[in-house]
Length: 175
Length: 109
Image 1: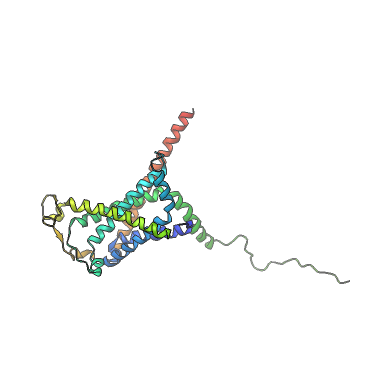
Image 2: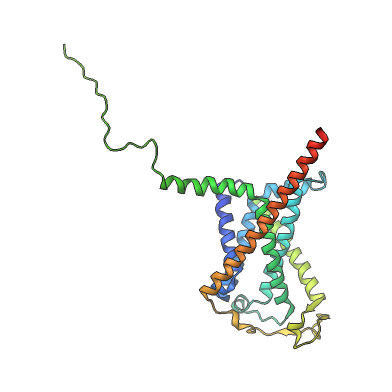
């Protein structure tokens, strides 16, 4: 899927905001926490689709070159994916609103709650590492698409005309 | 069509990972002491339906209500954690880069 950096940036900022909100159920309450987290899965699928080429390339090249930045990225992303899947699964297992909405009654062991909080903590750590590994990209595109346009709005343009400026007029003499 | 196929691949991988996590949790259910009871030691249980303690829905209802002040403070804590981890990783990266460049200079000289 070919996408521009701007689209990627918008999606990533949305995912980041959704992650922050859904990681703090005290802010939204349990119902919004559950449904937001479920919709978050769709956003992650979109994020993976946007980076599909990179995923396929690194997966096929994984064992060819041993020490490489993309290899580290790949392993970290894989761990992040596992952590997020564990959060989603354990969240569904202990869910009160989604499962009752679907009419499913689960008698699950208490340890799913422990798994949910452990996996959530792990995914926060993995998100921190993920952010650090893509820091250059983030700084570049946040600067280009967010900081510079906002700065441009607050600063007056250098080439803009200030009031009325006299213009030279060419007068043709009649013969 | 290609996108749908890619989505199916992602869902398949997710299902495999989720299946692995499910099998891992259900086969070796580790219950911490504060969950299993008052002062009881941690126990490893087989989740065959007989020994695992079922969680009744509706437990822990204290978490259900939303509080903007508490939620915002927790959100700020999460942001702080994220920031700290990011800074640590960036510093580590910078340190490794410096060591690498120093090694490179030593080899050159």
